[in-house]
Image (cartoon, rainbow, N blue to C red; front, side):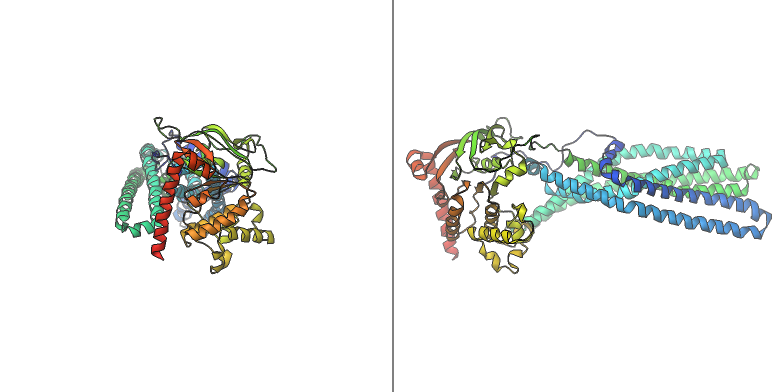
Length: 617
């Protein structure tokens, strides 16, 4: 059974647009994650700045060399100057190496902290968030976006600060050597700064579109991989390829637009310095011929300008890297800023020894994005499960049975009324505490890419480490779920079941998932049709074993087979969002025509399924 309404709202492929902030304010939000790394990043900047200053000092040595020993034709003074230049070059290389050593490790720590925070946030956000966000978008944020941020912090941020300071210091040196030539270079740089602002507006939009499209493409790949059996069974591989190619082509077009934007700023970054060099050379030769500038000063001037060429030309890729990092930061905080409507109370209550009395009191529920014209999916549910009682929940497809069970563990929160456990509103309990008292087994049995042991004992935190108690609980749960087949797997209970447990059959996955719920030993057990993929004989064995567990455990079972109804002490009939009848199976057959109709539908479906099984034998 699906837990979605008959007319669910469409899921967006990306986050809703947020108010645009400046690049500085967006990147400043990284401060809490970068704070522990700032000392080493600052040391990296100092090392890089020293390397730049050393590079700017070399032309000054050349000035003294040309106007001194070379002009005086004194070879004895040439070698000291040569060794000074060599020493400065070695010192520059050492500073560059230090810069890399200082910043590379902190960048990885920042990335790790952000990735852990993102994963923790994803675990904390409600199911409604995950219903609407494509997994590929989340994956691209956790991997490619954080990788962009790491590279910017370790490389882009350091070089932006250092190169800007180097340019400023270099311009001061140029103006001090010749104010005329210095002004020429400063005036020629104005178009670069003007185009830089234009580039930000243009590139930021394209960068965001590119990263969103990359997330959509990752979603398409993931869906195709997970749905490969369906695509192959229906021969729709070419259809999936066509859709994927269309998305890939859109991303390619966006990447080309990015490349054109970068090429545009590179045109200015390469053209403007060349024009400045040409004008400066003409003016410098004229000033030298007029005796206003010595040959050594002219050489030192252009040597200094050459040193500044890389910082100037680096503006292009540093700007593009910065805007990519800004977009990645915005996308990261799209998730981190997502509201969480299901939280722990400020002062949570505790139930130390739960009895297992579960009550629904005038419960209403509707999905947040459901149109107003649609009625509540659950419209005033009143139902009480006494401690140790097994209640079967039946109803037609789409009546809201799975949604009702999801409310018990706060996968969703009620929009009206309340759900109580032993008289305590479950919203007054901490979520972890609540979920220790309740356990669920779903029709869609999801297993993790881990061993059978780890999957079954997932709900028992005290069994994180192997022990005799853990082994006993494991074996008991596997026996009840008729999942002893796991001992025949290559490595027994330590066999890895693969991604989503796809190495097992549907019935095997359901039995392992049922064992997981049983192993948790909850006060209340919620079973959302966890036996749908089992054959009749295996189901009968599971039901017989479950009776022993249900003697002391409160259970709410969504039933899709008449045989499952037989497990229950009482049956609740869900109709049009309300519980319209509660009683034993025989009582409801006598008093409720709608219940008779529902059971007849279940029996017809069960007969058809049994016929299919017999035909395959």
